[in-house]
Length: 239
Image (tube, rainbow, N blue to C red):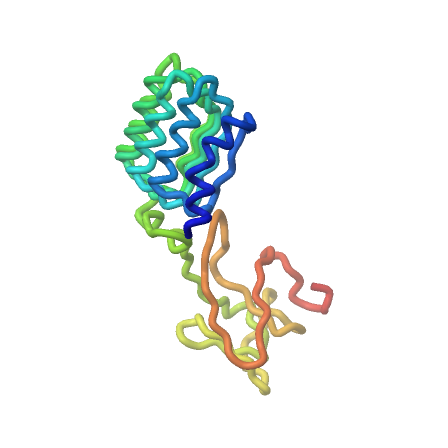
């Protein structure tokens, strides 16, 4: 959308005028074009931008390469750069390492989680950290893998199945424990300490950690869907 694109492109001008020390553009649809405009803010003299969060934008390696050109500029004083979930591979990591070699004395934190740097990309970043002039204190490359190269929320897709040991007896499971149906008659499930006795509830077998995305289809009167701790009460009506 044009209004969103305009706001991204004009951001560096706003930063210069207001001396904004940080900018949060997570999930704002920033593209390579937006990155090209942000570079002018990183190269400005003096540069007042200290923190830049571009997480959850499909920047790809081409966008990161443009950002790296600004990051490597001697006027850039950026201390925190967050690129989590931005479709970055080894190529993007190489651009960032090159920028750190050119301007190693300011960046303190680099977040590259939920990308796919691969072993070679991680080695490049680790080698850059060994530079005695590098001031980087925190590098995050967790939750990497090929699945993270899918655009948008699909990079966080998590396959879930329902737990037969927790399902209430008025619910039945089908389709390889991916579908749950309300029944008028109690189902002949064996006793289990984790089974819900009072509420018509069921937990998933898989524990959730980090960022997860899933979709649920339902029909009929409705259903309640939520996230809870495994220790939720199984008996009584307090939860």
